[in-house]
Image 1: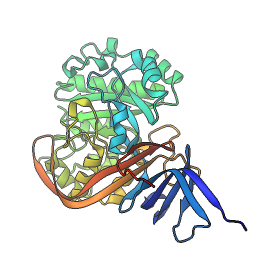
Image 2: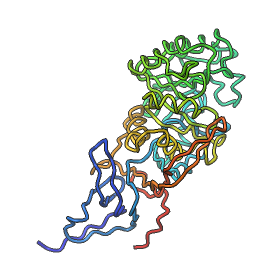
Image 3: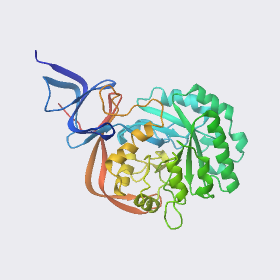
Image 4: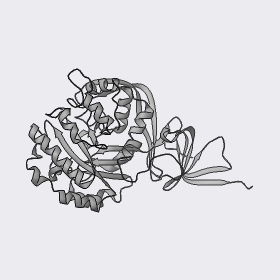
Amino acid sequence: MGFRVICYDTLIKNGRIYDPARGADMIGHIGILEPNIAAIIDPEHIEGKICAHRVIDATGCYVVPGLIDGHVHVLDGAWFNFPPERMFQRGITGCIDLGSISWPSFNRNRRQCINDFPGTIQAALMLTVKAEIGCAAELWTELDEEVSLDRLKECFEINPDVLVGIKILVGRNETPTPQLTHAVFSKAREVCDAIGCRLFAHIANPVIPATEWLPYFKPGDVVTHTYNKGNILDENYVVRAEVWKARENGVIFDTGRGSRNWSVEMARPAFEQGFMPQMLTSDLSALSNDPFTSRLNVHMAECMALGMGFKDVLYCVTDAPAKLMNNVKVGLKVGLPANISVLNLKEHDVMFKDAFGVESKGHTEVIPVATIVKGKVMFDTTCTDY
């Protein structure tokens, strides 16, 4: 047999290939032929010679499935939207825009922001057409006029490949009375059932107890901002029985970190009681873009500091959000799309600060090193020159 040479478009070398959901944990190389993974290579068993047009030396780093952020604001309509191309420097390869816009501007946004974007952007529409005004106090003032089932349903029929649900905002600022809170939930339930989609609900210390708002949720629906004050704990900082029951029945509880909706004083006791999140999301927006808030990699480390293992954290930012999306494949396997994040888990003392200014400490920093989307290198700090 002659000497064999294989040249890839991109070669990620010497990293810890870590995809526990599919049983991968090894030091090795990944060969990419756009847009897919072409080879998982054991360095001890290379036949012939391998090379690439571009090499990323991932020595000392984890090479993992591309991170997916299940709660961002990147569509051009919300006044605080974040530039989506900057997600790559955070290791993010795909996302769900959660309620930045509603049906009136979605088709335009799809053309401008989704269709030609290198990564995967899918979306949940805000229930109200006032989604883009930027002032929560003005929402729901004319509920029946703000919500058009026919138009929402039509938008889902046109865009079934990228729309994943309906979003609502519920809290002391957004729905200040019990009557309005119940009315918004009732309308959302009616619309989601008619369309056949899941409900995503921003919950921020609502004026009604969990015993009253949780019954509106069905299996597969998502509670975001789970660890905000007034959401899931009782006055003794115990996770409410009805919250455990909802989770057992299939309701998904998401962190939705952001700058205003994460309390370590709520998260720590919940974590200690075993009520870990099923999905980690950043609530990324220009409104909360600072080192302590809407950075998914920082939030991953923050949850590790509260007791989650890296394996579980990784699942919550890859497989878990992918299950809420349409036709999104996750994993480091030959033939799958080459959506890959390279992360450095740096061990040292780290300080975190929650939405209320409360500080906490951890011992691991999660640093994005490189991001590959559909085989293309979108971000790379290694500067590998060979």
